[in-house]
Length: 172
Image (cartoon, rainbow, N blue to C red; front, side, top):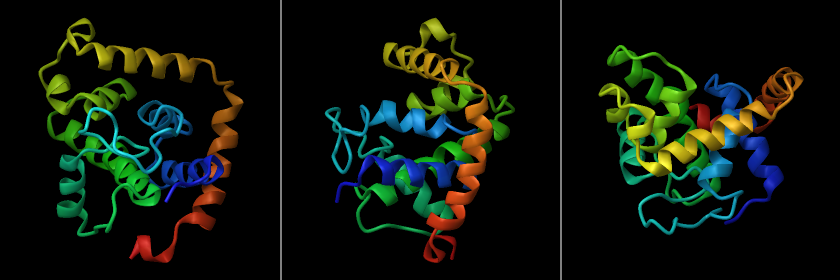
C-alpha cells in the first residue's frame, strides 16, 4: 500500500520526535533512500534495500531481535519507516557508543548507508564507497539549505504529530 507524501512526512516527523532525531534529518535520509518517495512500497533496484527508508534484511532481523516487535510486510510504509527510524535514531547511536565513536550526523549517516565498520575503522571520507560520499554530500547540502527557524518549527510540529500519529499498538 502506497502512502501520500503528506502521510509520509507526518509519520517521519513523529518518528524524528520519538527517537530524538534532529528535525529534518530522517526526512532527508528517506528522500534520498527513496528517490523522493519513488520507492514507496517497492524493493530498490539494488535488490538489497527496500521501501522508503531503504532498510535491509539485516536491519529488520536486528529490529525484531532487539525490540521483540515484527511487522507482516516491511514494504508497508509504516513498518519500513519505523524500522529505519529505530535503526538510525536508536541502534546506530548505541553501536557508536559501544565502539567509543562520536554520535555525529556524519557517523550516523555512514553507518546507515555503508555500515558501522567504516566508522569503527576510521575510514577517511575519500576512501568510503562513492555512493556513501555522494550520500554525505547530498545530506550536507540539504541541511545547509534549510533556514534555522525550520528546526524549531519542525520540533514543535513533530511533538504535536507524535501525539496524534503514534498509535497505542506501536508503543505497547
